[in-house]
Structures are given as C-alpha cells and as structure tokens.
Amino acid sequence: MGAPVNAHDSTNIVGIGAVTGYGWGVAPLWDGLLSSKPAAELVSGYGADGDAAWLARVPAGGDPRDGASRSAQAMRFAAREALTDAMGRGWTPGRRVGLLHAVVIPEIEGWREFYLADGGSRNVRGYLGLMPSTPVSMLMQEYGFHGPAMNVSAMCASGNAGLITAKSWLDTGMVDDVVFVATDLSLTPENVEHFVALGVAVVDTEPLDACRPFQDGSRGFAVGEASVSFVLSAGGDVPYASLLGGAMTHDAFHVTSVDPARTHVDDCVREALRMSGVHPGDVRYLNAHGPGTRQCDTAEAGVLDEIFDARPQIFSVKPLAGHCQGAAAAVEVAASALGYEHGVIPAPPTVAPGHPRLLDGPTPITGGVTLKTSLGMGGQNSAVVLAPPGTRAA
Image 1 (cartoon, rainbow, N blue to C red):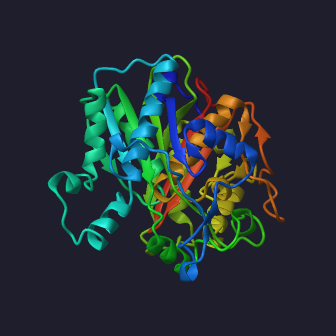
Image 2 (cartoon, rainbow, N blue to C red):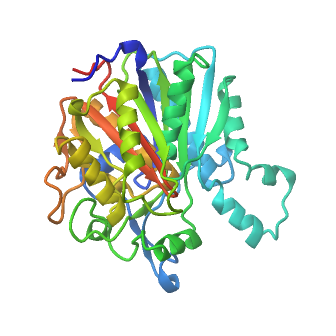
C-alpha cells in the first residue's frame, strides 16, 4: 500500500464558486448534476445552416460592473463566490494571496465583435477589456491581493494545470493562499462549427443520446461553457477536499490525437500517484476526462484496466455539464469536491452497455481517493489526486 500522506503535504480546497450551463452559482451546478439532466439546451444559430444546436451555454445573469463581456462577468462572479464561501467556512486570507486564471481562448466574443462590428477600432478602455490581464488585475484590486498573478493555459487540461501550479506555489512557500479560476465562455458559432468539423463535438441531438463516455454508441462530446473557482490553502476550518498532488506530461505525438501507445499518459498517472504518496490500490474513483470520443475513452479505459487492475469505479460528468474546454477539468474537480461534501458522486446515468466499472447515476460515496485525469488537445496529459480532508493513504 502507499506511504502515509502527511497532512502538511496536502492542499485544501476551502471555497468553491461556479458559473455553468446550469446557471450562476454552485447550487445550480450541484442541483443540475444530481438531476441527471444535461445543462444543454437548443440554441438557435449555432448548428449547420444556422439551425439550432444543443449547447450547455452560460445563461444571462452577470453584473455589467464586472466587465463588458460574459467571460469577465463569469470570472469575477465565480471567484467572488469562492472567496465568500471560503470565508464563511473559516478561512482567513494570509498576507500573500496569489491568483491563477486558466484560459484558452479568452474574450473570444469580445474579439469577434472588435473585428466584425467595430472594424478593429475601440476606445482605450474598451480595448483594454479584451486583454487577458484585465480581469485578473480587477480581481486583485477588488480584494487587495498582492501575491503573484498569472494566466495558465494547457487546452482542456488547463484546470488541472492550474491546480498543480497552485499547489507548487503553496508547497514552496511562495504564497499563503491561492485563488484559482478557470474560465471558458467561447461558444461562438465559428468555434462550435469547427469542433463539429473536427469530428469530436456533437450538437445535433441531446447530449445523453450522443455523449456516452465508456459506453457503446458514443459519438463525441456535448459542448459547454463555465467559469469555476477554488480557494486553495493549508488552512480553513471546513475544507471540501484535499489536493494531494498531481503531474503533467506531453505526448509530443499529434496536434489533436492521443498517442495510442499511451506511454506518457501512463507516466503522468504514475507520477501523480508518486507525488501524492498514493498507491494504485488506494484509488477508489477515476473522475475521467471522458469526452465520449473513441480515442480518449480507449486511453482512459486502458489506464483503469492496466494501471489500476480495473478496481476503481469510473465516471465522467461531461454528458451533463458539457465539455467546457479550458474550464472542463475545474468543473469536474468541483463535482468531486462537492461529492465529498454531500456524500454523493453526481455521475450521469448510463444509456448503453459499457465498461463494467462505470457508475450509473448518482452514487453514494463514503470517502476514498479520486484520480482526476484530463487530456488536452495537442498531447497535454494531466492528473491530480483528490481525497476527503485529512485523508491519509493506507
């Protein structure tokens, strides 16, 4: 079995905030996942020839004072909710609070309007609103934080990349606390069209009909949007979960495809376990990247069957929340952290024959270690290890 994990080696998730296709706030996200109903709705003008498409798009509801764009408003809302939540659970900010913002295509709607509607010309204030540094700066100013602040980007693995970076900051003593936000509100008609053309996104039918991770008949992923935030600290009276460690590798194989040899995916998983002091036999759940594409499902099922001897149970919430691109891993980590809090894994219902260890619908959880994998386009492999607060590997 794995070596004991010392309490000081873990980083606690002490606050959560969220904006998703289910609505503005953590409560709509959790209630939506537990309902087993996808967040996606038919949205006109996004399908072939301008038809309606099934999208888990963030609904209206932001505060214009947080920025002109949906993206800036969602980012500020999610971060503010996480900070308020953390303080309500006994967290007090330290002297050095850092900020990490995971983004892949930031402010895409603003840039689209800048070129197509504004003719490439805006006043200085409007132009600065397009800069990825602006929402970060505004949030730091709002709370008077003075630790390091930066953006991180690793395609669909950006959420895991941000968490790993946050833990490294905390472990080295660079900061006392980290506010981490992952934001991706990039569902323009053009982006949706090109993901469909790549053969990975499915928008012509309800998500559970098409996105079936680790099940027969899956055609790809439903697309979504989100901004999800965590406050990470060694403190906090009532943490949601502990982040024990994580790792990243790169396939260096193809701009979109996973290396079928899986060498560096496996290396990433093993290194994440080693960094966390966790043995494969300690892992009870695999919170998979699980987009419902054949190559990703094959790779992660191989990890489950070969590295873990098919012991853990596996699930993916992408059929429900959608594939939220740069914010995907953060949405899925939130699902596990909230699952520990509420004693339920919000797995989607199965709709077809699939992997024998695949969870079918909301499932009671009494603890145990969760491995969260996320495979980003271009060969970005990532894995983080989560556990209930204070957990030690057996």
